Amino acid sequence: MPRNERFRLLLIGSTVIAAAVTVILGVPRARGFLTPEIERVWIVSVVLGDAVASTSPKEVLQGAPVTLLAIVEARPAFSSTTRLYGTIDEVILDDARGAESVEDWSDWWYTLEFLWLKVEPLHGFANPEFAADFAASEILYTDSYQVAWGFAPRHAVDVSPAGDVFPDLPTGTMRFAARAVVRDWQERILQQVSSPAATEVHAEVASQQPHRVTVRAGDDPLGRLQGYAGLAYVPFTDSDVAAHPVHDYLGGTVLAYWLIAQRDAGMYSGPLITWESLDQVADIVVDDMFLASDGSYYWTNDPLRVVDWETVQAGDIVTIEDHVGIIFQDRGPGGGGDGVVNRWDEAWEAYFEPLRTTQLGEAFVSDIQIWRLRTTASSDQQ
Image (cartoon, rainbow, N blue to C red; front, side, top):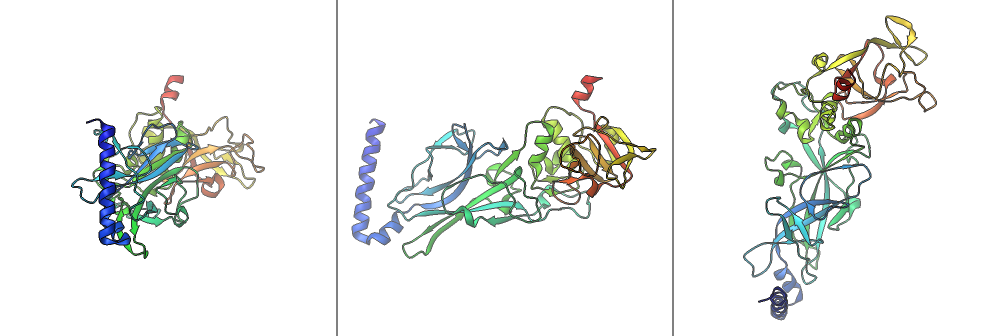
């Protein structure tokens, strides 16, 4: 039998059944009886230009439109199998299965609403004891209900933080969840099912975790670095580099973020190290400098000579022992660059707090060193 004919007969049959149930039970009870039983909520997303929405985490450039969609897997009345319902035609829940069909939620049934949640770290700092056996699974997460998002099954991605501990930046990493709710004609909740949320962040299977979207400022290392905003500061000393939380966008230090950003940009192939081992992967550019009263930095061994932007460049690593920053851009007292390394220049840092920008003078005063990572670009120039 042709597919169109089967669909037509199925539609006729379901209409007849719905009419019969309505006559027997009455409209309100019939709607409740016919409304599918929700078994699972899936969060998927689609980037402008994608053919099909999917559950796979998204890593996009700032400005790229990304849409979150909630899909329910539910069992209709008189059916032994579940179906997918949503506002799109197809979705990829499992790459191995490929695209799967999605049906519309019928107007015959009680209305399906969605309560959207942002899933982010509960604290801006994890592992305060600097425990060597600290595991990424110990980073705690929390759900924040997005009241202003309404109850629709779709919403544009917004990675701005829900908690005050994280700086409000247009880039960074956020996880998302949603709760599907079905109410009857008296507004009583009949069904309430949530997608994986805060308690499932560390689930071993990716499909059991909340949906992740990372927005970075560019494909270069400094642009990729900004994709780690919104994560907890996590000092990690375990020798098992593969277990580092930075790999799954769970947390880390600014140095870990910078090394991985360089690696992902194809600029670095060295190991993940802590600040004590910086000399293994970087060379000193400025061995010691200090902040003077005029707002500029001077060489400690030549206190009349200012440190300038011919010596220093964006991406250099500035340190005071374990306090590490990544020099970002030249700024003068009037806002524009002036070619002099001074207190108004900006750096990315995460010192016992999440990644953020800071003026150099607010964080680095004396006994300062500046390092330059040994990258493929620096090797090519030698």
